[in-house]
Length: 178
Image 1 (cartoon, rainbow, N blue to C red):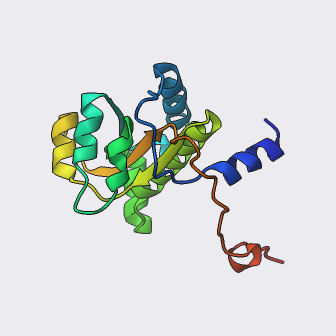
Image 2: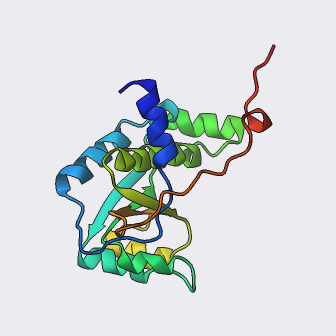
């Protein structure tokens, strides 16, 4: 992949809020996406997360774990990735305490970016969800670990538009130090 292809991918990726439930995500594509996540960098290579794939009836349980009026569109999503927090390695934990930085959150953010960008490269759409009934999802995955994020994953409904990206101007948050 050349840089222009990469930049085109970044411009194309967006949060999808209209999924086509009738088109399942293949296991082959899921394995490719998970491999991109597995290769993500993390503090001291600690990889403080687990990723769970939910499809079929398990996906319906995730969709039903939405809270209130948040994320009603996920009822039409047939695949979810659940990102659960795992333990630090000892060096990462020490570094986190010294710097007073939540490296787990940073590492999970990097993982999530790689997962959604890999999905986009496979012409799949995603939406990163932060509001959900954590206890219901913990029960589903049979772990008491903190659920940090859920990614809705799938094919968009026919005609779902590619929206123009709205971002700050380059010079507003990108700087060269002289």
